[in-house]
Image (tube, rainbow, N blue to C red):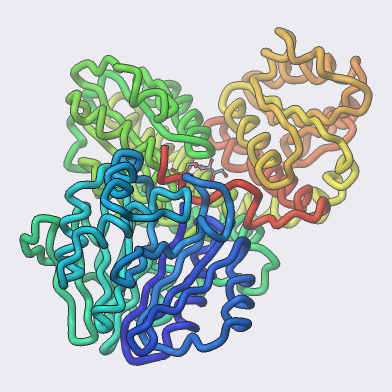
Length: 609
Ligand code: F6R
């Protein structure tokens, strides 16, 4: 949800800012803007559209030569997508500008107050309120004015501010939205995400909530909003450039789909002790006793992460025999949930920044639950809020549609399930057997990926259909939900996912001649029942595309198209079954001419509720 980059140093800022902003475009891309301080004067360029359009606008305007600046790519919350609402937002008194990621909840009250104080607003954004408030409180010290303003603000923010009156100063602050300061050689790059920093320096620190950092070319000072000094924890960034570049792929989504074997190996590496039949999860080992005795697990997440959680639920109940429920974090946080003794709440999130998931975890923690995380981004807000957790280790996910994080989430939850199962009831032999199957998964995914051209051909046969169904049972009911979500979000085709048995209770009325229905029909406990559901769709004219187990020749007689996956124990089958569905969504979006990595209206990390 919006990306911020700011630079202060000795090099030309514009190329550094724009390169960083392009790397953050996955966070939002409806408008963009940049401001620089040049000979003590602000120069601003803004535009509706992508960063490439901002680049053109800056070229037309000319003269963006300087070594201090900031920029922003927007995902609109307050106010429509217009140039006036694009960041940076300027004040009306002191020549200062602000870029902001987050939402200011009391912006209406502040706007009324500031209007009464004589400020004139030109946009509909909450961000402009921050720039006017800092301006109102400015008495010759930008750092102090920012601190004072943020004491009045409620909501979430990551901000960067520069001011004509202090041409050697950049002030940045954070509460709730991520912000990192990269430390170079006599230069500093501030960004919402390490991806914008890594090509310049590997040294960085993440701001904590309420931190304010004043940066000059000579150094930086970190404090909180009450001006109490804070010592930042400078660390080495763990990503490398290759992970955030396309590397010959046309889209990040395709790259990330194909990265899944490698990602899964990384996720499992060092965590499987097959000889002793046990799972080694350093992150949660301190809480092994609580997990062994857990009376209930609540998995909470949004979107794709919730689908992964639903698969985790099946495994936790089936294999670890612990009562488990899944909850939309957005509902859970407001539902006055009952948390009994012995409840473990697990937040599942790729970004670790999803506002609702973070709030749900906090709520559960306050009510006495042990708070765990299954998170990809190390050091993210949710990760820091948890008592312990399991990192996915699948590397940065840049495509807006989540793929490798989904399989990573399912794998990490499955390992956690086995970790618990082994301590509760599972024999070492049974666990070792499961881990051997786990070990074989990456090679099996590779086999599915080899069939990508076949998946493409099948998908293109149905590309003109506007309504699709995705159906599955048991472990693969959530896989069906995920298949439908993937298709919807990048190809804009209407798709519904549901348990195959639910179809008869209403949705069957939708089926007409030629409607594509994707069934996950791998060999498993409910195979025969799924075959009956397939027959019901066929007899009403639907076209069935089945994801089936290799060697199942029988199914060919009953469906139009088959996408095969290797045989695998049922609890692990979603990790394979989802791969052809991800590919289908990808090829559908490409065939329809959509921008796969930047689907309309979406942003990668939903840091507002
Ligand atoms: C869909 C997708 C979203 C996210 C959801 C949660 O492809 O990516 O549905 O899964 O917004 O995001 P995280 O996992 O970052 O909490």
